[in-house]
Image: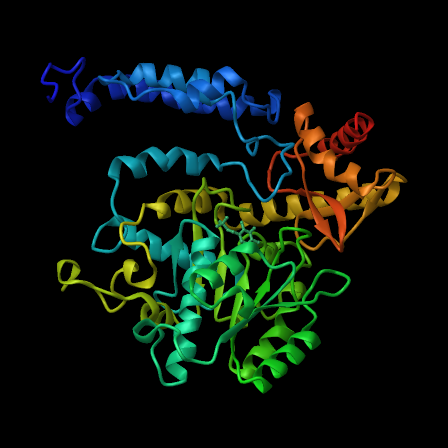
Length: 481
Ligand SMILES: *Cc1c(COP(=O)(O)O)cnc(C)c1O
């Protein structure tokens, strides 16, 4: 039987907004400011105690609704004390930035408006046109009208780009991959390096290409694609009757921040009629660092570029972006407009939902607009230069240290290194031991077959003193292993 007892409190939107929300909202704003202001004084990370984990994961759905103030109290007591760590200036793990305050500011406004940015004539889709263009302009990528869209992250952007590439190759060969599937056709082959992100492999698998058709191209000593090897592999696949269709380069790998020789890859792609995709999820903005542009030459020749505003820019998670030289390629891969979604008032570009798999799309543009507007071009350049400079400084400290060894050149804002006195096992255990101490946070990886430590710099507040603390934390942690 349904419960028809009166609610414990009023849940009509206008009433909540006039009363409870006004008060709780002001308190939430204060909590946010306090949280962000005090992050540097708290542990970077700490394990969630068993009792808290039980509270978080095990609680029962309340039978009756609870007032907003109580929800804030619970959030303050049980959620905010256990962050992932990425807000802290000594968080150097994976590729996770702190949130930009302007992005934080407008998140509740996006939620209050709560549109679906599938398309239509409302603020969201129009603002998305602007921020996608801004992102393309920042990194010097060509931008025809409609040449991109915001996504959940680069993983989804990659699905969009590779699906566009797949359909373009099929159409060029006189068939339609959406209509026929991949049955009975020569297998399509894609090329990535061993340093290419896992999302490239996931997208290829999801698109039915088969992991076997993803060629892993070797890298040089700086973890950049060996383009001569790429050429040989393509020629070998052509001889075997396969259908090379796409090469994916990296503009900033996760392991070492390496940028592939994009111009040389573009040449090979052009020669063989391949789609040239660039994974710039993390590193595309690195082109803005002083002196970095030559490393990125050729980026502007790509057919598609994945770039994550929720990485280096610090737009609150999640916001990725797929940029496309020919927006028609994505539309050809995804547009499917049922009768209930036909919009006679749409312009020539149609709806964003025609360019990717998502139908209902969140208002990602507002936090991206706010972050970019707050920073401005000069602020983005300053952020990129500051963090890239930290990576170079750490590399120099490592080189001078006597007990650390640099494992890769620094080209973006990642430093890959190892603790020289420690074995592979010790280096593998160091990140966890450093994290547990709570004073800094790094993660590990494997580079050139060896256990590596890596530090990724994305936080505007990180200082050179924090780098010294990091190296000392690693030494102290290693002693305990
Ligand atoms: C983060 C990242 C991805 C994956 O993007 P998501 O936003 O996590 O989906 C791909 N490539 C690189 C280089 C990345 O840093």
